[in-house]
Length: 91
Image (cartoon, rainbow, N blue to C red; front, side, top):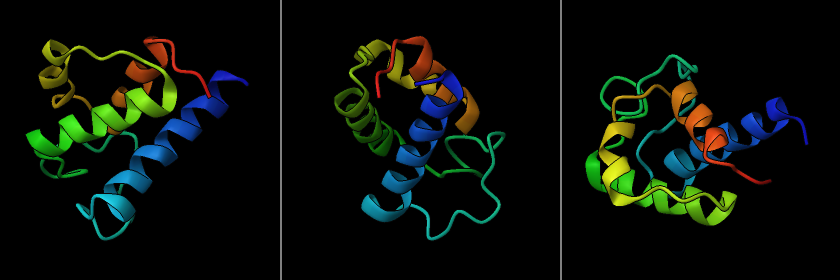
C-alpha cells in the first residue's frame, strides 16, 4: 500500500471516528488537512484525544505513549495523519 493510500485511510478513519462514532463533529464540511485537531477544527478535547489515540493504536498497530498524547493536540489533521504514518502505521 502506498503512503498516500495509507494516509487517506488514516484520515478517513479519524474523520469517521470523530463524526460517526464519537459524535464530536456533525459534518466534514470545511475540514481540511490544515484543520487543527482541537478547537476550531476537529474540536477534539483532551479525553476524546485519548480515545482517538487508542483507536488509532488498535486499528493501525502503532504505539503512542501517554506522554506523547498531549503534543498531538497541537497538530492539524494532516499533521496527525503524518505522525501516525511516521510511527509505522499498517493498513
